[in-house]
Amino acid sequence: MPQNHPNRWSQHVTETSNALDLEPGVFSWDDPRKIALSLKRSADNSRRRKAAPFVSAMSMLNFYINRAGKHLSAQQRGVLEKAKDELRELYGKPGIEAEQKFFNDK
Image (tube, rainbow, N blue to C red; front, side, top):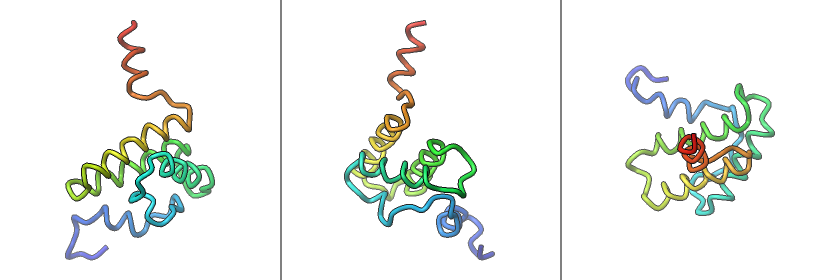
C-alpha cells in the first residue's frame, strides 16, 4: 500500500483480496435476488475464504455498502439492502423481523 495514502485501506482490500471470486459488476445489478445468488455461488465455491459461506457473502456485501458510503445512490443502496434479505433467505437465516418477533414474544 502506498505510504502517501495510508487511509485508503479499503481500496487496498478491494484490490488485493481474493477470498471470493465475484462476478464483474455484481454490486451494480438491479436485481437483489440475482446479487444474492451470485454472492452465494461465490462463497459456496471459494476455497480461500476463512469464515462460513454465509458470513463471507454477507461480509462482502456489507463491506461494499459501507465502502461506497454517500457515493451509493439511494436506489442502489435499497437494492443491496434487499439483497441482504435474499441472502439470509437463501441460507435459511432469520431476518431482522423474525428476530424482533422472537424477542418480543418472550
